[in-house]
Image (cartoon, rainbow, N blue to C red):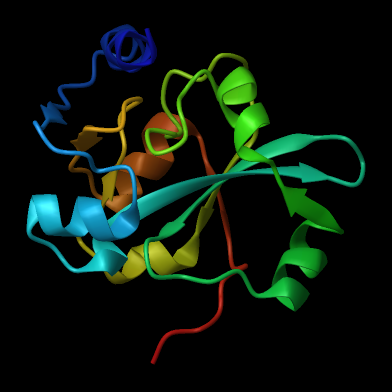
Length: 155
């Protein structure tokens, strides 16, 4: 169902974005980077957070990024990553396949500036063996994502 919701999301936007389906798991950054033959940073991991004001939000960051607690608090206030058992219910996607496309309900989407270091990133596509190749700019456009700087700086 989740992969289907991503396909429907792209179709509704008339987006010609190919979904890559592999025979191996791409559920972790390391697995995805290996399967796609790219550096871990190019994997666009999608994280779900619950903010202290009760809002649930989606954050897409480079695969090797770590959240900078001070920057996160400055941007969002306090919040915590959602536990795995809540992620699928809120996003409609299984852990390892979570992406900012075809969500079960409308959620604010934030894109960390860390992904702008690449011309192309690979977020999941709703399943633990799927992804898409997309530029950070196109990712922002198709998701109406807001750019934030909440990850630790990279050299």
